[in-house]
Amino acid sequence: MTYEKSFLFQSQATSTGDGELLYVNKSDVITLEIYGTATSGTVVFEGLMPSGAYYSVRGIRLSDYNIANQSVLLNELWQIDTLGLVAFRARISAVSGGYITVNSKVVNSNG
Image 1 (tube, rainbow, N blue to C red):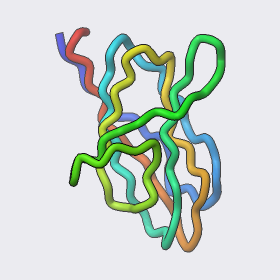
Image 2 (cartoon, rainbow, N blue to C red):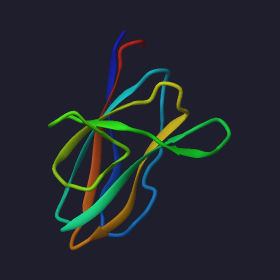
Image 3 (cartoon, rainbow, N blue to C red):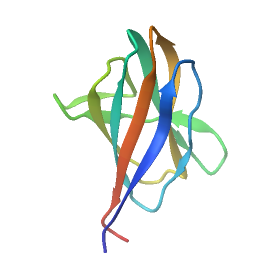
Image 4 (cartoon, rainbow, N blue to C red):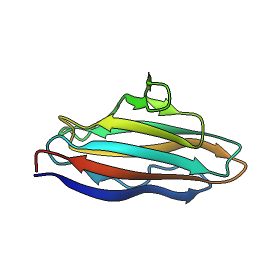
């Protein structure tokens, strides 16, 4: 059984912040869409573990298959595998000259 849902991590954020926390189910795959009007900014990918600690998580930029733990450009798609995580967040660590939105589609083919 496959399920899909949308999840909004950051909505027109004009300042730094953790954003919304998505609790993941088994082996979700998240496709992040990062866009906005900011002239510069950084979105950091982080996973929550059972200990309560957050760790850097690598994703794949779908335009060129670059692997990184953050995005510094707008108008990008990233794919994140959440296997083994309790939750995931897209934290904005820097933003200037506008806003950043981080939206997503979450897919799990294991039900």
